[in-house]
Length: 315
Image (spheres, rainbow, N blue to C red):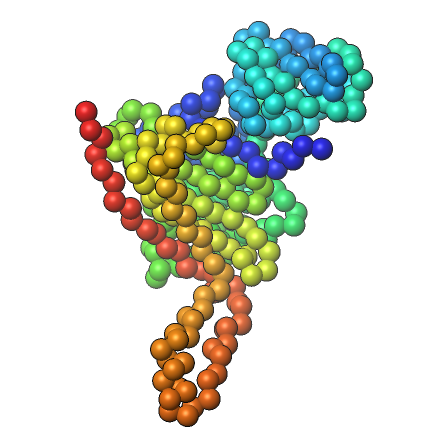
């Protein structure tokens, strides 16, 4: 069976929510991609032939090659659920239907881009706490405050009872008061964004300044068991390229694309230098391997931000 775990979305998809310097815009993007899906359409016909299903939608669709769509309402039921797209035209979406006999499906059939599998645990005015919908995940939350116009704020929490009541916040107030900044848009013009996610991690990339084609701000959050229990990282990246060509479905990404990615680790270790080892040997002191500190949840509460130089667009 074709894996449909990882989904990708971007601002140029038909029906994608827009991102500008408006409060709540970022939450609309996250809701659509992580929780709800978007581009809901009624399928005019769904035909299976030779193990391949072709959905026809007269009004068009949001799907692209390798994106994941969610089919509902079809008989036989084997056509329902998440499907990885094999090919598309303006009015058709094709996906694998191995094991289903040749036929025309019946029922009121709908199709949309499938969400990544997160849930909205708590909400408020321009505020949402998201958590993984995977029961094997840690159950930690990421809270996004989208009340601002040019940027949003984000932090994680181990426990929450409502969107404004939480325990074990990370990063702590001492580390980063109010949480990390997520630049959204520097003007009313809509900005490019990209999301690659499954139900345990999310990469959110935003180009907040249209005049800087090389400047993309990336935020990564994930919920992993055990040693990588909590991670959040934010970083400007994709330096030195026009990201308009760097769509997830590109079969040949630009050769000059440079991706800089840093993830937070739940534990940290300062490696013993070779020079220090040589000093101990010279002095006759036995070399002792530095022991890694035992893991505790508190060691995962640091957030780092990174700056990347960018260059203005040339005429």
